Image (cartoon, rainbow, N blue to C red; front, top):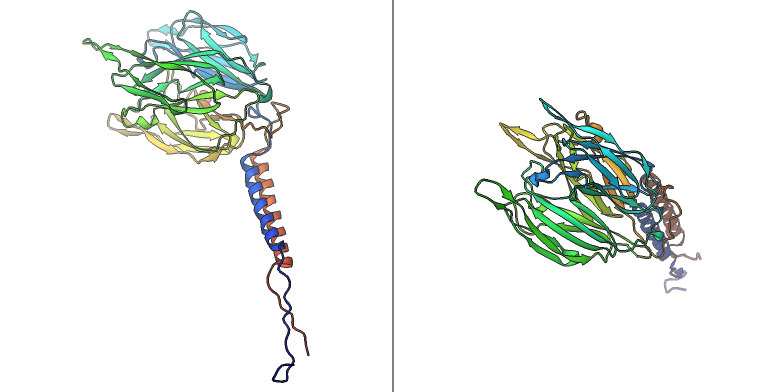
Length: 451
């Protein structure tokens, strides 16, 4: 009894339990797994969902004033097993024989000439299936500098183990390439296999010096300027990059290291190194900044183009794309594979006799699924509207823990499905955590005994 005669109240404390902490852990795990599922959904490699690839290549004579005719784009990327329908649009008055290594040949007809100028001619290459994975050259017979590459992504990376090869590339440093006062490397994308031996020659068409650096491979060289003769003729300068072995897979940027004008930071390109079988390739996701230029009448054929035609990132990257429009007409941008739909690209502004390009920043997105995804202009822009296309290529993450893919065409889990499953896991975890905290929370309850 208490001193005042009233019964003493006894406080009974429930032992503190770890179930409340466990409930919070369940919630945290559900959130982490859900977000991870959205970023890296379980998948087999998918070269998009389409098995038919309609590809367009234009022949541009004297590209950048180099004196060389060249294909654009120089790199085409498809998936193993795809049916490839290739159209070559020749804006040159000379025809040639085209060979695609081990796959197809065709006679490319010359453009026609008349009093009004040159009329481009399209040649349809016989359709072929990209049966084997790898990097295959396509070239104009008798024109050693006129070449490109068809890259066939394997449907099963666990079996992709090509022998190391010697790869030689010539990059052009072209001033004011798209009429926007920005200098560019051309081509802006080169693709090799892991362990290939790579040699790069840089042909500078600019009378200003440039630099070439690929930090991941310890490359940093000065690019000699072209020489301008008294008669105004420009003689390009050749700079050779030391030969190196592409020992590490991934996306490696090369950049100009000498300030060369307002677009200096956009004078970039990328070397893509495809991983060989047995390689663990799981780079940390990054923010990937990419630049596209809309160039009207790129090859003198009245057709507008995206430059470059291929963007390559790693799976899991957050992708930003800036589009610089040098056309006074608006364009559109649609990338169905990642739900980027009908983004409007603002037109360039006219200021007297001068055209001032405009920049449009597209909505960023996570490249959470590996594969090859087409993007295209979604606003009718003339007779070549259907050929104003490009590709986003997402390199897959390859880990020892991940089982090898069983099919190249089954496709990845769609983004919408991954999002729904992730959201469902978060809700289930939250409800379970709330119930357990309410039922078994570690609060100190007291109970009183009556008299």
